[in-house]
Image 1 (cartoon, rainbow, N blue to C red):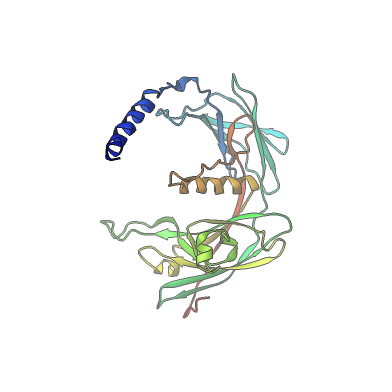
Image 2 (cartoon, rainbow, N blue to C red; image 1 turned 90 degrees about the vertical axis):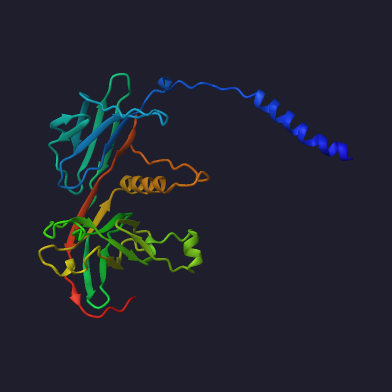
Length: 312
């Protein structure tokens, strides 16, 4: 019996050599991969439309993305073609500032490819108001209540708080503050993923943090909904009290494609484990890949009331 035990390592080694000896290396020629046409554009209401064109790149290819220059790119607003203002290094700027309700689309012709096209509609400006802004000078906390009046139909939104920040560690004290999207938190149910582990561990009470959050009206479709947010100020808390550097709440109406695209981008960026399933980035570009999806934003300046804050 002992002799059989000593033979086991030898047998395992021989099996390993046999398996590795059957290994076959297949060379893959990156040049054989035909790239896709990529079109990226996120039109905003009352802003000039620009479209960026390039070719896709194989993930093992270390070369930079190739821009598509001199393309036959045509943009249409409500069915009428608009003028191209400039094109430089794959960046195409059009004489078009769409408004809420406008439909815009593009047709792209690249030699050797089928026609690439996409369309989007500018959503209505979000209807919301700031109910109350409380700033507690003792705890340095700021609470903001926002009421969103949601129209009928499926709608999608994003929210951020835009202000200013001054790096107190800069060598010169007179350094001008720079625009900054502030960190904030909320426990509102519309931002909570009820399927997440955190939600279950916290017994349905989960606080979400971020500088920009998205949500849909699935829980309050066609009605008003009030949300409570808590702001966090970097370096200094008194910027909110300085009229020279106001803080705004910015609400954005997102088209469905814009909402899906941003969500999948976030999930893709969150993949950090080799056990994670790959995320398919949402695209609405036909004949190629990319995104052509609109938004419409509105901002309101915060007017804080100084008093003691009772957290909700």
